[in-house]
Length: 206
Image 1: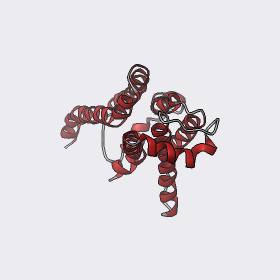
Image 2: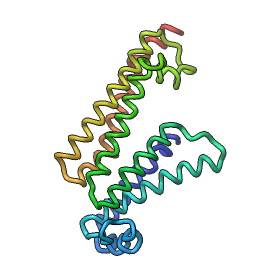
Image 3: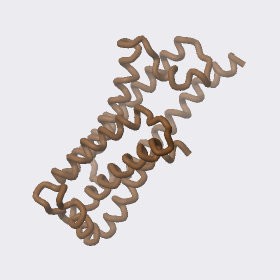
Image 4: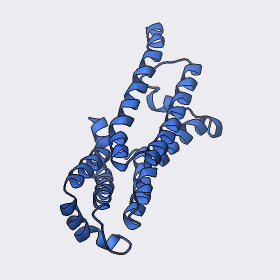
């Protein structure tokens, strides 16, 4: 359930992009009515309408996530706050400059923020973030915690670089598909690999 909540803006971004891409005239009319005041020049073109509307919906969805948590008096994770700031800045720039390159950068900036936090925290603050997050559920030797933290830091570093490559060398529609299914698939494979790696330590502890 939490995974669906975390992916809510990404899923809506994908759905809106596909729906508006299939109905560009209606998307342009809708975008011109609701987004023209936010777009430099005041016009939403036929080609730009799908990505601008999808970006606007992703921003609104992220705000809704935070509002939902605050309304229920639950803590908003730092990762969600970081994601909100990044989508607001890069999504807002995408809409204002009607330029898809900004929103294409958003996943890379987000992944590299995660990577920097994971890789630099042990050096700057003597803190293993992965251990802080799941240490209560797992009892692992300290060297394993270090390897786990390093692996996740490098994984997000590679994910950010891959997003740049896909965004620069493939059509926008391909990038949108890969943003949801490709990265989710890679994350799943990585998590399974991590689980297999950790399984021997869990068995040893038992």
